[in-house]
Image (cartoon, rainbow, N blue to C red; front, side, top):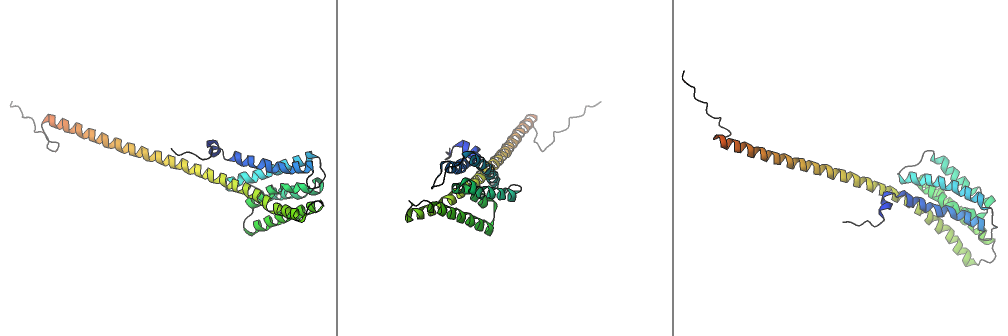
Length: 236
């Protein structure tokens, strides 16, 4: 018996781990803005929580559609909305709000194709790097090496988070396709087994009928090919 590496409930409901992966990535921006990180003053957490919830809902719409191997209806409008909600509130919530851009970059990777996807992803990373640089330069305690490390963080970490979301959606799609293929193979195996059983039953019934016919022929004392002799006519 083959042992499944992931838990069975993951294979049966692969979307729930994908949804759970989005929640901490969406929660980090309200936490950073409310606490005030990198020298930024703390802000009211309620607007950040509401905006993060809207971005999370839009991103989940994109991710679940990508898990089905398609793009949602009116995806251009939802992508524009998530871009605006990512960049416009920076002047209200502070530079720490840009940490929500991991979800935005994941939407870019899922919805766009070809060169527009590369250009949009590079632009998103560039905006994150510039804003991170502005935030670190406001803090005079940071040394040059700390600034370099933070800039590398701004390039690598959001890209990895976005790739994890996009890859998770693709993995869910593959799991669903695998489950559909397994179901189809099981149905094919059941059909083949039914055909084999019906063929064996047909052969068995044929052999039984042949045996019965041979026994009846042996009792009447004639061969199956020679008809029995006619009965003698009585003389009147």
